[in-house]
Picture 1 (cartoon, rainbow, N blue to C red):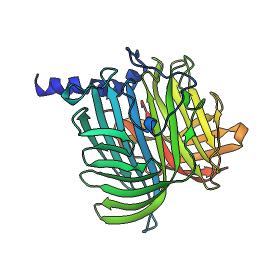
Picture 2 (cartoon, rainbow, N blue to C red; picture 1 turned 60 degrees about the vertical axis):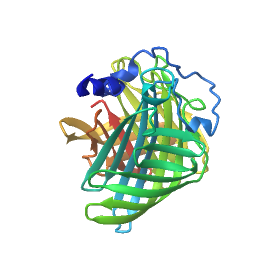
Picture 3 (cartoon, helix red, strand yellow; picture 1 turned 180 degrees about the horizontal axis):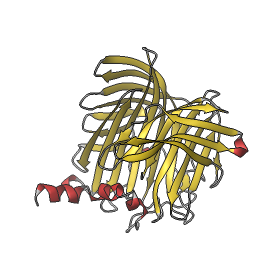
Picture 4 (cartoon, rainbow, N blue to C red; picture 1 turned 135 degrees about the vertical axis):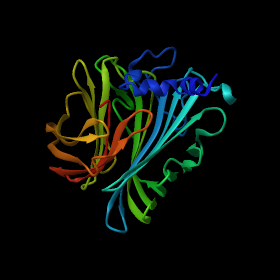
Length: 344
């Protein structure tokens, strides 16, 4: 097999995701699919689930430097499977992909790593927790206390994270519905990390502190066939409350879901239609028009906010393209957070 064919064979699931993310709406093809009333087991569920097609460990952080400037970082490990099982060595059907990014007010740095499973180059263990691809690591004795490291050609970071507050389960006890047809994922978060460490930038190192948010999600068919992308918000407000909210865009209209997280860690799910998402302004990012200024409102929660990109050019020009960057929040609630947009 020549090199190009080998790459296509190894990373076909990722190529499907690149096609407007429509690959996430395809058939489950023998993989397990999420069911209601799943009983989570920890620490095991912090680890991989090879009988499901796709999975990710996704951490973002809003940071402030000793220089007084605001920064954002992303660290993500994706698992995508060719077949619904795991085997050792080069016969493993598991594909791993890592994304790392660092956003400043003026620049957006990113890097990507790829690996076949079964050979030790990438993977996740649950106890003690460790997620890695090459030298990039998110690791700790448990998910509550982590070290995080990644680097690209002209950036890097070394961070320490310590969580307060409980895990938050989205949807119905972690069963997160994504469409009117019932497609779903298992989805929980740890939104309460305190972060401190060092960013490595072309102009030198910067000591930073801030707050981090980890998302864990796995499924085999999370979208309907007509859904082309999503807009996802993770927002932390100055009063200690938090909000996770997303809309999935489809030919039959939008599907929305949200979780309101109180300052004490308790949470409640907000069903489809509770959140109103209104794009206000778009930015030209690479060759796409992407909404980077939003109004988000939840009438039942007295929330009416404006969410604006810290740097409109936070495009992830990776094998599948998306936008991911830190945002500021003003209006009825003030704060910071992260925004992810796919399918534009």
